[in-house]
Image (cartoon, rainbow, N blue to C red; front, top):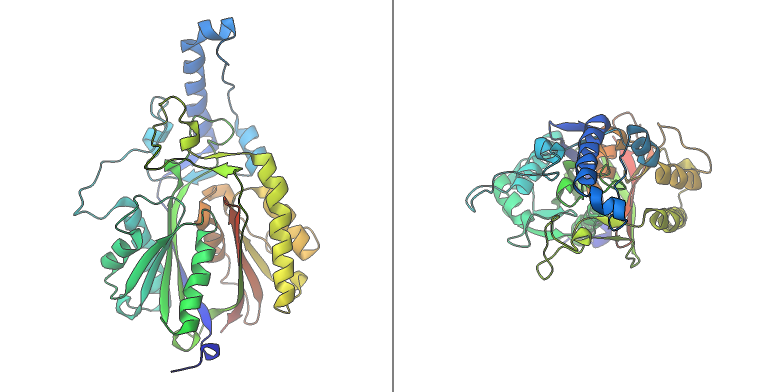
Length: 378
């Protein structure tokens, strides 16, 4: 048996599945404003009497100023844009058919395996780390494991938007302990299902996607990989981002009092409280690892809000970050929950040189935050 200290965990590869359909802000605004016009017409009497509050229309300018988002990929476009539905819809599958969430997770995992030249039989475990699970059991991870043909184990974990980074540390811990030498962390996120598409303040935020990260022992990994220098996780309870949907309090968007069964947040409070929490966490952990934060070559931050990322990057690097230092995918993908920082890493890391240091960081509901410091090798 090797000593635990001898086993260094690395990121061997990443994978990405992007749904082919995308919704532009112009399409989204047209749908939302059609709904607003219909609502105000149907409730004209109540609005005139003051018993019903008229809904305000949205605009492309409002969305881009509030978030930096210009488009988002989705699994089910037409029903989302239908003013009479405004939610994703697809045919229910039988128990013998692969579930929608597992299907997109498998596609991202296959992309990661191919990038590393790895066969499924060489993988020991699958962690499905995501915000929006399709069901409680059987675990989505086990279904993904079965579909890939992996002989090992799998389990689900949910830490909202930080699920992927929490999953990476969990996988790295398995590797360090010698319990596994190759672990897939899969984050399929169908965020369109938990979003209230009729809420002007949030209907533009989320998109759908799936990512995968292959965490392995260094002596088993491909020559070119990312050494995991250190990780740090943090949680602080807050009600400022919440979703109350569950087995004991189920509701539909049309049901009375159901607004909080979908995504709700106090955006200004989240911004004010999360930015300093995350920036301080990054700087302090970098110091413990002997890393100068200003020397980080690239920050792959959670893709939730352009303003939050700009301020966090500035506090970490000590200056306004360039697009090269802190790349964004928020403009075309929207907020994809736990997958966001992984998409940014997947699409913006091939140009870095051996020895370059970077940071994968996510943050969100909980509050939760996770950091993964990495060094390019090979």
